Length: 336
Ligand SMILES: [Zn+2]
Ligand SMILES: [Zn+2]
Image (cartoon, rainbow, N blue to C red; front, side):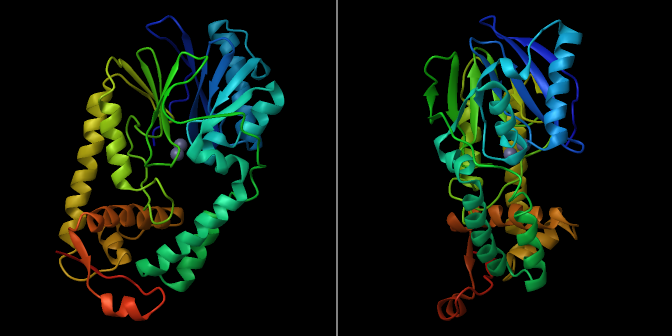
């Protein structure tokens, strides 16, 4: 990921001023929050909520005054909209709401991440356990992965959500919501005139990590690719502003590149399923040996692509007799 730590100013076709606040949510991991000068003032996303992240956000507000002569503070925010339920975007919600009393909103499919954070994480980790066993990952590695998945368990205190949304114009605001599930169940893109805030759905350089829907409903590559097509058909967008990295002046091109990237990865995955293989085996051939958290990301990415192929009848399970007899054996897949 290529961070862009510069504060930037934009003006939408309708004359609304927008500032990009690059908040260092985790060391060397910047999340772009956007301050939108509506009435009341809107903030999109809040960083991770860790001490350094909150300090980084306050520093962004200070720099707004120095660099753009815009005298706004965190306590001036009246509305906080979260683009999706990932900790580097929502973790700072408590901080922003405590400082400002802002109304907090998120897509209805990610409400429980905010209101029942621990519960969602524990259930998600349980499904991940089933997935990793089925993928052929060794017991000791599974243990490590499960702990990695739960690392943020005590990082966030549940917060009260004031409003939710699904799709269409957000009442009382100039925003239009597009639900774009895939990267996260409640992922949204938000339109303001000719600007589309794409959050983690479309990014300037990287393709957001995919995870099988087996683990979390409304994720999965099928939903993700449909959501790319959906955003591609939104007319009149001249600027895409992502949740990380730099701006996208040619959003269509970036969407096409992202789609092509996954088509190529699907072809590679299919080619690797030339004989019965577990998700772990295919993952090692696709990504090689990875370290730490990247091992888990590789299994999830591979699992998402194999799930997509299986659901569309392009690969099948070759050890179905064993699957019938045992509780949760390793699944072996092969091209049909
Ligand atoms: Zn995300
Ligand atoms: Zn993100």
